[in-house]
Amino acid sequence: MELDDDGEVDDLGDDEGVGAETFVTVEVSGLSLYTHHGVSDAEREIGQRLVVDLRMDVGESDATLTDRLEDTVDYAEVCDIVALAATERNYKTLERLCKVIGERLMERFGSEHVRVRAAKPEPPLPLAMQEVAVEVTHDREDAEEPEEDEGA
Image 1 (cartoon, rainbow, N blue to C red):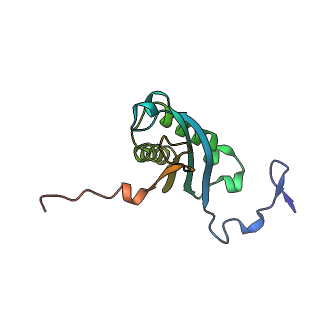
Image 2 (cartoon, rainbow, N blue to C red):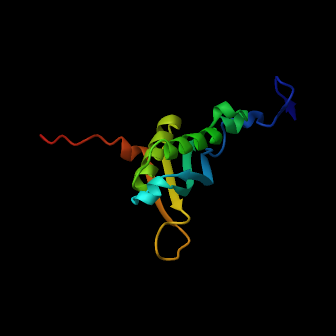
Image 3 (cartoon, rainbow, N blue to C red):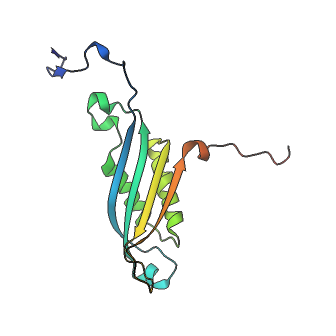
């Protein structure tokens, strides 16, 4: 067992960089927000609870070696971005809200893949149900495909 420069156990040994590639995914599950999204006037005026789940592929993260927050995605910041996107304006569809959330997360953290799910646990419908939900998936390669030249 060796000590590093800070006097802590260096468990990396001589194997640093050898072995399987590490891939990091950040997930937030059950983020509950009070919002005003929907088609009906009541949904937009009175509002309702919305539950957001997300999964964000971060790729390699230095935090797996350094154990430092600044070397990874801070999920508190992720939650703040989601909360701001969900409360700063009203959308008629959950599809649009999920797209906006995903785009902001990809832009801020450079993620390759983001999945955002938004659910209304008590939808204003005349039938009994547990929830209604929408899930939108964002892939960076899809977002960066060049537009076709119409003149070709």
